[in-house]
Image (cartoon, rainbow over all chains, first blue to last red; front, side):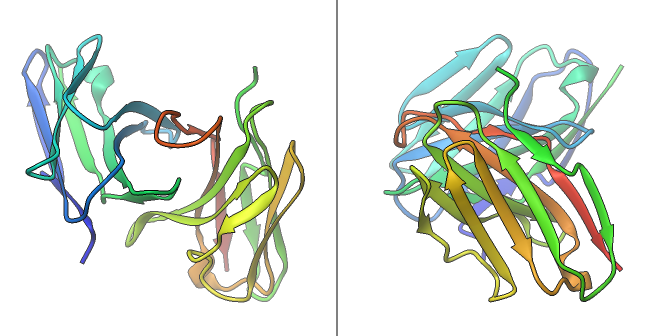
Length: 108
Length: 115
């Protein structure tokens, strides 16, 4: 069983829609990471958070430590947001444990 | 900065051959990570270094895999002998200082196919 579960696995949306991707984990963390993997394969770190909420442009990441749950929201989605979004938990060391990813497709 | 540099970008080899993947981290970063990504298992940490010293190699699948970091600007991941099940994308990433305050910067990856 993966320690980090993401939902949904696949998500298709129309341009302009509000997107939510969920991540649950089973053990305590020091930080939760959200990453974006482009269709070409490159991986970019979007957020690293240990509490509360972070916002960058149209992307918002939230975390509830008590419920061991994090969400990534995309407002006013655009086709260029199409990518795989991966969450990863970090414990007491530098080691990341990854979810399987959510493939997002935003149609024009 | 040019970011994390990996070479080669693509590698096709035959079973039993030795494969060496190379990584140059971002200058000044003191952590270096090797990851493997497959369709079945997703992203997995293989090994990471701090100041050129291996800290956690529990993700290295077996003795056929080895990694070195002879200096702060270069690391290698070697597979000898290679097997078809090693086919995957191998990513190198680096970060500065210690977690959890610093994000990791990923290289473009090496796509390995073992026939």
